[in-house]
Length: 225
Image 1 (cartoon, rainbow, N blue to C red):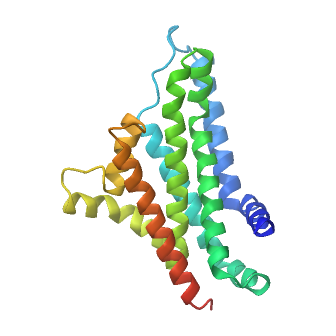
Image 2 (image 1 turned 60 degrees about the vertical axis):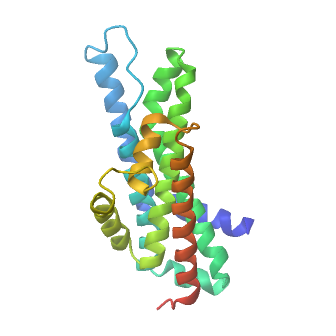
């Protein structure tokens, strides 16, 4: 299992979708730092804590990276080759989802790295907890994207779900309950994990668990052709 995990991490880090996304986020970070500190800069006050937009950006990036990782492996036959030397499909699927979730969390860290530096420099350590929630949400999104791509045999399936889920949730639940994925994501982004939002956190965890189990089941029963 450890060997498989190590191989999957190295495989993920070698993928263009990870390298290019990390490079783009790094360039965006450098440009933002330059704009803030060299082009006039803020007027002495540290910027406010990152809000919903920051969390959504990290979540969407992590989701698409997770989906791209698994979709690319389907497209280029990597999964077929892996099954030759590791035929345990359940372990292989779970490791892929876990690694994608970790990569998603890392992408969320890149998105929020500027805010982390600002909060530390301004001594607002208490607000780092909210940024940590964003990293957890990014990890959740990476795992979701990977699970759906694994079940759908392509990253296109994950993209369709990403585009369709907000509309479907709006139709089924106009009040955007935090017990639905999109509503729960927004609720945790705004309030963090606390007693009031514990239901949202449990709902998101259950959503990822169910999606991963279904994807693993389909992968275990399906043919790689």
